[in-house]
Each structure stands twice: as C-alpha cells, then as structure tokens.
Image (cartoon, rainbow, N blue to C red; front, side, top):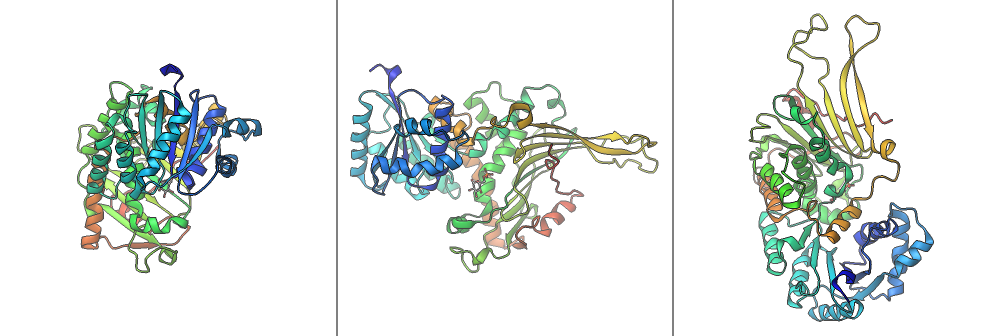
Length: 486
Ligand code: BG6
C-alpha cells in the first residue's frame, strides 16, 4: 500500500467518556458528512469497559443525534459507524498497549498515520504517554504519529512542566497538539481576521485610541456533576489560564509575519510575556451561594467560582491600557465576548455644559457566543433635536451573513487541523507555561494572604458587588456589548 493510501487511525483513549460521546464522535460524524475526513479512516475507541464493536457503535448513536452540527441522516450514520472499532484496554496496563498495537496493525495492514487522543482523566496522561513510548507507538517510520492532549494541562507551572517533559520524552513538540477549544471557535479565530485582514481597525488598536478592554466569559450553569474536579481547580485554572488568556492574546498580540503555527504562537508568547505581574489588589474572587452544598465540594471550600482581574501589558502598543477579565459560573447569562472601549473625542463641541465629558464612548464588541458577530457602537444625532446624540449600533451576525449552518463546532475544526498537521490553533509548551506563570502567583497569593476576601454572589445574578466596585474604582463599569440581536 502506498503512503498516499495509508490508513489514518484516530485512537481515542477514554472512549466511553463524556467527551467522546458529546464532542469527539459527533464532530467526526459532522466532518464525515461534510466530506472532510481523510480516505481510509478508522476510529478506534479504547477504554476499560467491555464492549463489542457493535455495542460501542450503538452507544454513540444518541450523542451524534443530539450533538452533531450536521442533521442526523440514518444512511450516513450507517456508513460512518462502520469506521468505528473498539478495543478494551486499561491506560495503566502495559500488555494492553501491546494488544492495541496488534489490533491496530491488523486493521491498518501497512503504513498508517495515527492520531492518539487523550480523553482520559489528567492523572492518566503521563502513564499513557509513557506506555505509548515504551511500545514504540510514537515512532514515525511508517506514517506520522500525533497526540492530542485535552485540558487541564497541569494544575500549576511545575505540573505543566512535568507533563511537557513527559510528552517530550516520547514525542517531538511538532507531534503534540494541546487543545484549547476556545481557539477552535470560529468567532475567536475571526479576531485575527478582523484585525489583520482589514485596514481600518488596526490603526486605532492601541493606547492612543483604546481606553480599556473587557473580556467576559460568563456561564449560567453551575459546577453540576463536575463538582469534585472543580473544587480542586477553581475558576482561574478552569477558565483563565487557558480560554481567557487565549482570547486576550488574540486581541492584543502583534501581527505575525505569516499565518503559520510558529509565527502565530511566537507572537502569542511574546504578548503573554509582556503582561505585568498581577497584583492581588487587582483581583476579585467570589463563590456563589450554595456552592459548598454540592456533592463533592468541601463544606468549607474557599474555591472561587468567579474571578475578575485587571491586567496591564508592558509594551509599546498597550502601555497604560487596562484589560479587565471576568468569568464565573451560575450567573445570569451565558456570554463570551470582548469589548474594546475607545477613548472620548479630544474635544466635545456638542451639548452645552458637557465640557470635556463625552456622551458614550465608541465601543466595539466581538461576540464569541451565543449570538456570534460584531457590534460597533457609535453616536448619532437624534433627528429633530438641536444637538442631542444617542448611541446606535452597526451589527454583523454570522448567521445572517453566512447562514444558519455556517458555524462548525470547535472540535470539528481542531480535529481536522490535527489530522492535517496544522498546529496553529493548539497551544505550544512555552505558551502553556507562560500562562501558568501569570496565574500561579494569584492563586498562591490568595491562599497565603487571604486577600482579597472571598466574596459571595447569588446564583443567577450578575456576579458579586465587589466586581462592580473593582471597576468603579477605575471610574468604569462592566458592560455587555452583544445583547441587541437582530
Ligand atoms: C471548559 C471548562 O474548558 O469550558 C468548563 O472546563 C466550561 O467549566 C467550558 O463550562 C465553557 O466552554 P463554552 O464553550 O461552553 O464556553
């Protein structure tokens, strides 16, 4: 068999878990329906449970029906399910890797490419990688070998470094794909296109025109069935170290010379390394009422489910421009958005007595979800008035411009990129470590000093009053910029 016709195997460790059922298999099914998967593909699920191939395929059907972005078509499913196989195996048992290797070789029948997907509990990452190495399963003599690593990537800087070391013992950096699903969201990627495929925004994208930036990722869900994991993580590890810092990088980085993985990631690392050490007084932490009653949460848990931070970037472009980040669970809305708030005009000639106050400064909202789009807010003269103004909006919505099915699920894009060997939307080892360098001192500072005190908030509310006071100290307010809709 020639290399061109080689089989591609996707091997999912943790195949009976939630991620495989809700995200990975539905994303692969959607890619299959769109004709985007390589020819000669097979998907091999590995987990400890005993299933026959047929039983495993049957288990996946509901998840695909419920979560795939492509409408469920029974004929397509019937063809797709034939690509799926199951191999029982325990990530900690060496002999099971030998069995897996034998099974794969039999099915591949010649040169083959392999994408290993770690969808197991994080404590199994290192043993799995080690065993893959010990069984020669990372060697690229007969086709490429890549590994996808899910978050959380470590719980702090030392553990992330240890995991990077373990990976690098077996795989080269270019074989490693660390997932941050926010980078797979079309709207997050569009931040780069918006900035660098247009001429009109970039000239004002700096400290001369921007007053401040707000990054908001709020959720309505509480910790639910993940309480035990969450209680040891908290919002900074769960959301800031990865998703919020990734959004910040995309918003604030310098333009790379080309759109390739290393050029892009070099700029992101440069940006992260320009962020000033975050002082504890520039942080807010809070927990929603009732959190400690959830199963799996310590009675006296101090784990924050909400945080807000102020960040300053010490570089030429952003000197003196605050970036405010907030994220939390059990809040009133599910929103992910970035607001770039511009400065007031230098002189106001409208409105006697306004002196140098402006009405409402211009703002640009990049709406990541749920109503994906971009809103530009500016002032317009109120018709019939002498010199009154009112804020109005220009809006772009993905769905009206590109159609209802235009937005693939993040995992579709990321799986496809990993299959195609494009690591641009995956996090490099130095990027992960840089992010931990920013987050670790905050978590340690909170634990050591108890400052600022853990605030509380009502589930379903807008968050703790302390977060509003925090911005009010700087003469600013949290905003939602994406709520007008069509
Ligand atoms: C995950 C976090 O990475 O992102 C979850 O672990 C969170 O706690 C989720 O709910 C949010 O993702 P999204 O795509 O729904 O905004």
